[in-house]
Length: 288
Image (cartoon, rainbow, N blue to C red):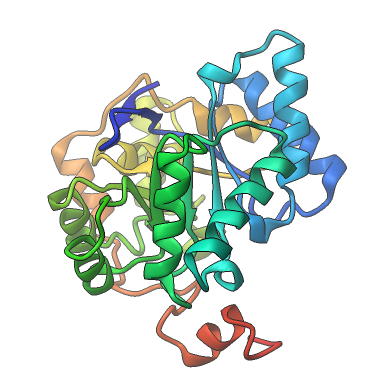
């Protein structure tokens, strides 16, 4: 495993396991346990995923079974928009998440969206950091203009910005902007949620063949090699293992460029500028 050093000095694994869209508690607990057994040490959840309790149970079980220790794990969760109202609502949301996780502290707390009063909410997670409830704080889905204004304004710069990053939405300038502020980029949807024929793409497959790897492994390695943390998700143990098996090869500069050339310049998963999406997140609309 390779690691990113956060602006707090904390070490974060460059690859982790995400539990988005695993709402069933029993399934989430088992797949999280399987991920830890496979070797993942970064586990990414969120209040909005409604599975923090399941993740907490998996973590406790893995520690009890001797698979890992709490110190070896890096647990991330996120404050949802409806708690991004005041400093206190965000701070209390952190405490609620820790209670559900059954942990005294998290390794990283993120604001989930740049919505609501996210400046006030960030002060809440700054307080959580100062109080020892988390080892680092950051944001998610903060795109370049918003992130720049944010970093120029807040007292503690975010350690991480988790956004959509994959070959079809490479966001090279956004990544450069994050790094300029000392913010580690982290990719949600690093496999493009299976879109664009990513698993059978001829060029990605050809690159993978050279190393005995799949197109998916090439894509994950590409992001990691440009300093982007990745959190792929799978409920299948064999795929978890394959996604984790990317640390024994490196892409050439030419191959890195070839993968990046697939960039479409926009997301085809979610448009964060869509007013209806924003209304849905802030609770002003029931459908998106």
